[in-house]
Image (cartoon, rainbow, N blue to C red; front, side):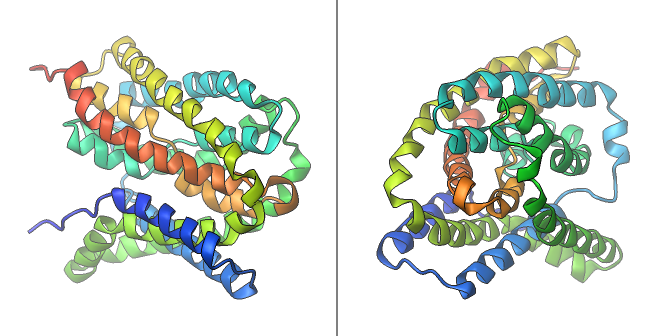
Length: 317
């Protein structure tokens, strides 16, 4: 019997809980800081172990899907993100946060939506590990270039330790865990349960991130409302652009659905440790930008689940 997937709507509840703790029980403690990083590491492990790290051949088997996927993430998304970021030129921390979260390819939440919308999830699943590794290298470089010098190379060194400890170490553990699960039925069942409860791990991390960061920026929280129309505009623009990429690469209807949804889904979950590692005195708002986007993306994916099947009826190819 398949394990039931926990709804990503629980992450929205986590945002509310984190905001409540930040507002009514503000805490500044090394213990809370440590719990934040533990929660982030567990979150990354749960997200990464659900990806097919041992079967990259699936991605190579469908080159047209790869072309569409990488075209969207390396050409279309940077162009759209650059245009949207110009609106925030007077708010450099929020501008950089927008760029970081929009430039990062999604590796978690959008896959569930692809399944629910009847898309060909297998066609994009195999490329996810490549996108995961690539975003840790490409996204900071793109953000530096597209920010117009607001973010510099000298801002990145603090993120290296976070990437190593909160992303690569959990990633390697996830790889070993998958290898064990491939040989053991019991471990395979545990992996299925972890994958089904990924939203819970993300929610716990979000609670700790908001609880630890929001109290220091209470007077700036209203600035986050500037992001709401921009993030929704991104979701609206990416639907036709993703569909166009699928048409130009002659994909099947199921593959077009997958590209549309995955192109709109972003990788804020993986970028959250990077955002937390940046100098808090300068970039302290960026983790909150990522959380705001995460909440809006969850709502957007609910809409995509309904409209994508209407826009792309399944064919008989």
